[in-house]
Amino acid sequence: MDAVLRAAAIYVALLVIFRISGKRTLAQVTTFDFALLLIISEATQQALLGEDFSITVALLVIVTLVALDRLADFLGWRFPRVGTALDGTPVVLIERGRMLEDRMRLHHLDAEQVLQEARSSQGVRSLDEIDYAILERSGVISVILKKP
Image 1 (cartoon, rainbow, N blue to C red):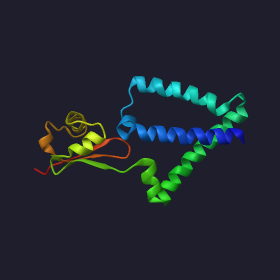
Image 2: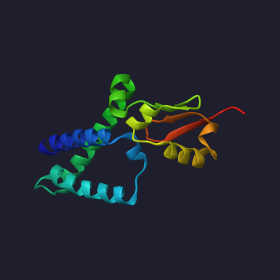
Image 3: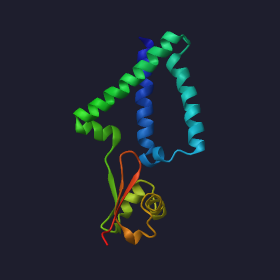
């Protein structure tokens, strides 16, 4: 039972930490971010397993973490407010060609980052071609072009 409680505590802690770190952070994983995730996993493993490194406890921890994740997915689907709290909501960054500076600042984005995403996904050359840009729940920026 101790392993289940440890797993639940670590799950909630990581959920809060990654939620606070922001959507865009999760969408832009660099080599350093990957290395940091490996270090976090090693530190987390110590907290999850304590002194018991048996296969049974490790499997119990894995099953608990996966079950909690599936439960969070289900609760987010069943209760929209829970889904919003866990995953956030899409944020409009550019609306009808006008950049919404306050939202960009809130999510630590600038025009160049939006333009970079628009170039890679839509072949856009300038911000004038964008009708809407939306920061999705996953951290990806969706771009809708102006009609010609």
